[in-house]
Amino acid sequence: MAAEARRIDLAPGLSVAAIGQGTWHMGERSARREAEVAALRLGLDLGLDLIDTAEMYGEGGAEEVVGEAIAGRRDRVVLVSKVYPHNATRQGTVAACERSLRRLGTDRIDVYLLHWRGAVPLAETIEAMERLIEAGKIRHYGASNFDAADMADWVAAGGRAATNQVLYNLGRRGVEWDLLPWCRERSISVMAYSPVEQGDLADHKVLAGLAAELGVSAAALALAWTLRLGNVTAIPKAVQPAHIRENRAALDLVLQPAVLAALDRAFPAPKGPEPLAML
Image (cartoon, rainbow, N blue to C red):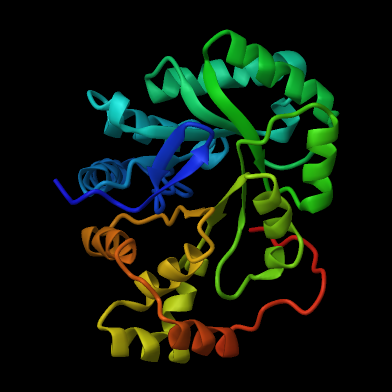
């Protein structure tokens, strides 16, 4: 077993390793299933105990992969899943959650998110989420792909906000202008998806050069950067064992001011409000 990973509170009373495991594009091809299951299990063995998935990923296929990976070790895993906006009605949310639970092979989801804001009134989705908490089907709930105005509407509608999962990485810093401060002021964690821009950031010359000086991979440096604010978790998706070990290594990186300043020069912070980026 790996040494204890750096941890944060994803939700009140719910501690997780600051780097978790994403599953976008898993469960789409049966030929890759064995490798995907093995990857998630390796991550868990290394202390990456947060697994993020969604009913959208592989139309339930990713949840089935996760279910196989966590069999026999459910109590060591923090599970996050998400409901489609078009399913997020009073009855539809409950039905979607039940389907996810069956695919995951568990009786509870730790954090259940609305995947993005759709046409269903937020109050209706929130009512369903509260019913799921009362029934013990979920422990916490929150949102995904919500900007600051959406989050304000969510809270105004009576919703709890365990976390907000958004696109955030060195090249996508728009949320730093308003959303991250809004969440920090309210002790709401942020989950960063695509924290290495699906691998593209690893080819950036400045990032790669700094990483080489530090003796780490560019991906590990990019991941460590996302953690610098203290209330952000990153959920990279990886299948190759070497990449999973790089992700774990990022938890041990403490970035000095000179490195952070160099990254700021190469990837400038926003100078004003920007529309929420999504993939």
